[in-house]
Amino acid sequence: MPTLLVVDDEPSICWGLTRLGEGMGHKVLAASSAEQALELAQGNGADVIVLDVRLPGMDGLSAIARFREVLGEVPIIVMTAYGDLPTAVAAVRGGAFEYLVKPFPLEQVQAAIARALELARDAPRCQPAAGPMGGLVGASPAMQRAFKRIALAAASDACVLVTGESGTGKELTARAIHRYSRRAKGPFVAVNVAALSPTVVESELFGHLRGAFTGAEQTRPGLLVQAHGGTLFLDEVADIPLPVQVKLLRALEHGEVLPVGANRAAPTDFRIVAATHQPLEKRVREGSFRQDLYFRLSAFRIDLPPLRERREDIRSLAHHFLHASAPAEGPDCLAISEEAIAELERRPWYGNVRELRNAIEHARIVARGGIVMPEHLPPPAAVSLLWGGRRDADEELAAAAADWAEAKLASDGPPGTIYQQLLASVEPVLFRAALREHRGQCAAAARWLGLHRTTLKRKLHQYGIGQQ
Image 1 (cartoon, rainbow, N blue to C red):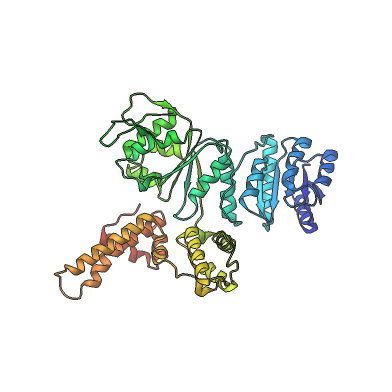
Image 2: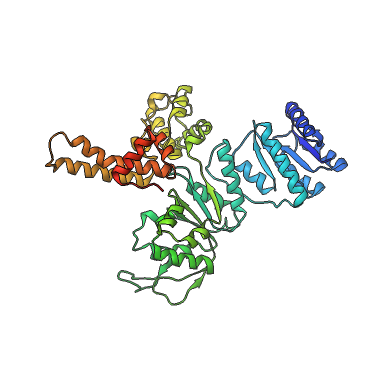
């Protein structure tokens, strides 16, 4: 009969998990402190430990190492009511098997116990891992999953692909991975590929020799060399030109960099964390992104949730940004009314955490030292509401509006056609955005748009828009 050791200073938690463990056919031992639990472990052993973080005396995270001394690599399930990134990091770094945020359904801990016992039978060693830290905030299940992925990524030296909509915190994630990796003392070099001209991407990444091209008046090391011993963060990696993709793949595979104009590659030691809000799989199918590079960059993947899928974090994020934006000479506004919180929680936040941060900064300025009220908040960004705050969609919207304006000014068509001209310019952009958002699924896109599926199909046919 497997033995389950429950460690929590809340009697109700101990009682509930004891009943659960016994119902699963396990022997259950319960303790209200880490010290008491260590005594029980020494006398009785344990196959799985369910351990709270906040305990009287020795805290749960500190106790993990002590349990390892007594029981070896026993699976440890950590529980906490404070689901922040540092706690997740410490838990994963200490070798915790699972990390649960209170309150949790019994089914969740039951499944975790079952997996832990299976691991203990099939692979007795639980490998510890290191983890990150950063300005990421959130106790929602979606963010807890992201925290665990970040912590695991920091323990490895593999390439990481961070995906998510604009404003979800992809660079913060990359910085967190770097900060608690073995490369933390090395440089963190960040570049937004989309901000570079396609003609200079190769030179920026790999560097160049003096005289390699017109204007190259001196030798310059590239970003890959500047990231030696550290991490290179490639934001909007989907925008790397195909010829440069070939060269980047070779650099990753051989650990060496060939500057523009050079005949001999130089070895360098770097780790790449790449990010994109675009579906790289689609780019691979279209032939604009190399499949071999995609697999190399996505050795480990972290998908960041949009804010609308973790609304329970909005309150804590709002308070975090309010304090973070306070002036250095002293906070002039450190309170948000419940009415303002309710308004924040109602908004769709297609601009994600970045849009929320900007809204709080705006409200702090308007409130002028008083409590933030709903009237201090800016209106939702119209583009973000319609297009999900995505850079390429914003560009398409601007292009469609410009085309329509030109058509209106230069129109020699019959009177009364301006509205149809507007629809013909904007509808295709909207439909393509909806299909991208829902991975080409017509039914889901129609629901999002508020249209009947047959209506959307007819419109797609009218504009010659094919489905994925």
